[in-house]
Image (cartoon, rainbow, N blue to C red; front, top):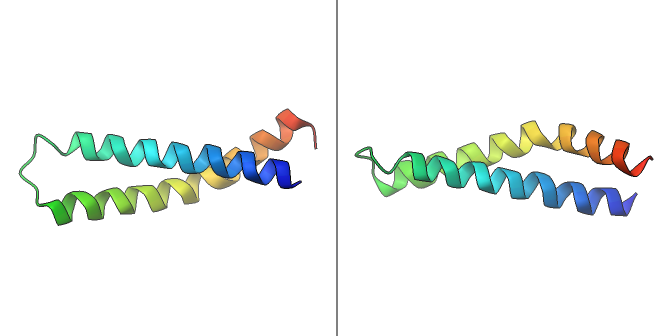
Length: 66
């Protein structure tokens, strides 16, 4: 079970970081302050983790056959 949790955490946190990074890249053309960009990226990261966590955990469990 610990193997599933470590793999799942790596996948959904990595994916959420990637999504937050894409958000930061997407805000470059706009006239936003650093606080807006960083705050938005943190918000996107948190929401992405919340959304991805149950999806990724169930998929990893299916692949490992637990």
